Length: 358
Image (cartoon, rainbow, N blue to C red; front, side):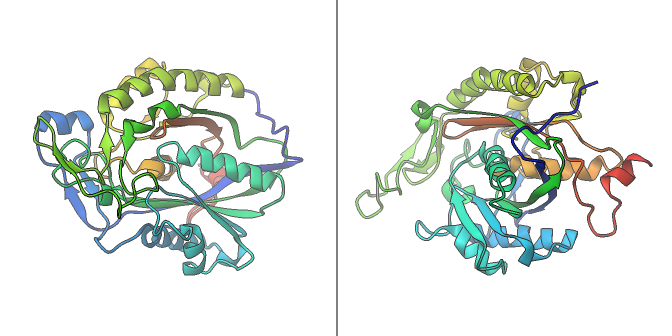
């Protein structure tokens, strides 16, 4: 049995996840096309934001659900971190807009960070730093993504992958030296920046200077230079090469054996990739989350969406050793160990400790 992980740097304070809430837009888009390809992806449908919706609109819904479901006083939040690659505007930061829309105090810090599939792990690390140094007492970490606005409807390769959605995670410190979030491992390979890219629209290729260029590949998939382009083979090779090492380093840093894990939760890219990674990482005997069929790849939101569903389904078990791994656009990757035993109950539910006694 694994020994308790000690938080060396927290000064008697241990940052932990206290609550998670999610939001999916009501519109559902079914995946059509080649049946074998859809089966390989494991994604039958995705939720798509309304045409006039922006990232903060989805984020508001996730945050409000967290406040409602857990009875959280919004005035108690003193820092807001927002992860998105589809901000409302280039300027100002979407986190500032969200702070006002959900009624957080004006004394609350707020910032965006632009990261994709590894974004939640990085957000947990940033949260841990702010909380355990005393710079924040209660922090809200939000992910929100509207990739549908950047995936062409005529692109049968990229469009079926990505769904829209938002998540909200409440973090704060608990007294004691037991580590609830630790063994963080990070990595970056900017040489692969173009493996997933929207070529036009940023300061390198501004709209007023770069006309719309339309292209069609050999399979008839059509997209413009303002849409997402993805090298699927390149991303798969990157994942197969990088993730096993990430898992080994994270487990080694935490002193955790595979048999001690309560769950392994990877970025939910697609069913095929996750099946291959589970085997390659030697996690066949570990509970392993692989379910993208009704929401698809929600980018930085895949890990909290998965955790929310796991917590709901595993309601008689305290999850103390959860392996998290995010990897993708950037190229960027990150992993950590999470102890979810400090989760608050939703209103009307028992605490994790009470559920363990049932």
